[in-house]
Length: 290
View: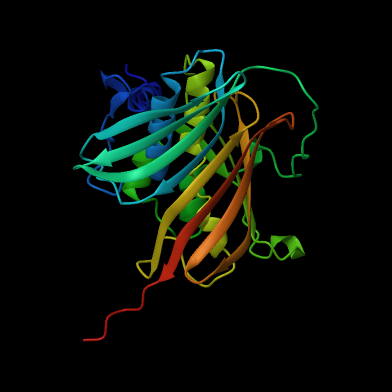
């Protein structure tokens, strides 16, 4: 009997494993989901995969900065052009242009660092319920009266996602916040580079929605137009993506039809593995008056 969850994890790995076309030129497979806008995390993760191809395995990405330029088409592959901007003794930089139909849909810059020791400190993990005390995503959305869109079901099929209750007022801090636990639904035999690529994919889960928590509109309402504008990830260490990771998010600002959100990803022991920041379009579209 086929394990559907293992098949979904294998499919995700295939999606994030890009194809060599020529020197520094790659092709990323089309997503399995139906005709939709390409999930931003997919383009970021595939672009990071392209950037990592020219690096020694010992040198891992420590940061990436991306701008979303156009909506991608899930039914078509994406071409990635890598530019080797810098190779130094400790750091290297790669620039990636993702293209469909001859037009760029994303620009990404990634920086890589050779291993070395140094000063160390980290923020503490917030005090939240463990994953065992949180409902799965479908149950949580159903309880809130928001059915799970089919495209999201496809996108998250490889993950076990357990959201906690959001806090529109940030518990009195004035910053709306939410959290979720996630892990791959089945183990993936992934090297350190692929684990960071998987984390880059997952880092786009729900982040910008934090910016609309205090406002009276449902996430899946046709009146709400949301899209990622840019995305940045700082990798502090190689994440254990097969085990539970906590994604803690807050939003210190929204305005002018944009929202800004931040996130931190911890393991269950409280180790901080990544920091994320994103600005997105958060526009209320008024119904047309005929």
